[in-house]
Amino acid sequence: MATYDFYKYFENVNIDVSKLNKKYGIIYPNYQPTNFNLKNLFSQISMDDISSFERYYDDYIITDNERPDQIAFKLYEDVNLWWLNLVINKISYFDFPINDEKLYDMSKYLYQTEYKYSLDKYISILKEFNENKRKIKVVKSSQVNIILSNIFNKFYQIS
Image (cartoon, rainbow, N blue to C red; front, side, top):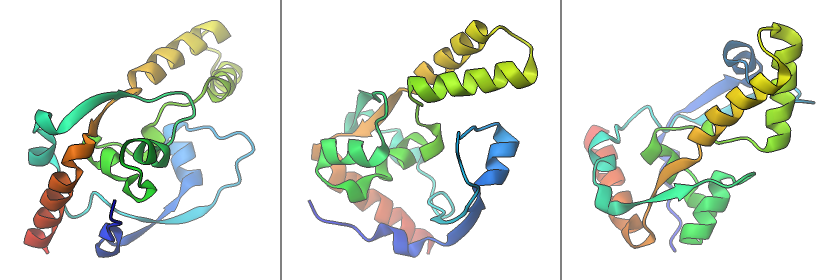
């Protein structure tokens, strides 16, 4: 499959992940706060009309520890398309489900800092929340070129 240089048209955004951690309560054990320069994929185009065509998509269940690049390789044999299903589902990398170890660490942290519920209750709440994130729509491999063409056409109409 061809590699698309889609990213070069989007502005870079500097993100201080430590601020996201504080604001949204995201916990990364042994994490060193770092600034990242990322492409703002959502700044230029709206995917509303493209993502409404159900015939282009399949349901997909994200497995434990599965990353967007792994899904792209599994479905399209191209890790460079890692962003495609994120854009279609209007989610970010941080919206992916976490594994059981991270879920337990997060539950333990909440239990030790908030004292609202028992550890088991925090685990139960986070597991349910986590499981709801596993089902996404993925572009059918036979439809990737059509979807990419639509994305590029929309981008160039806006630019």
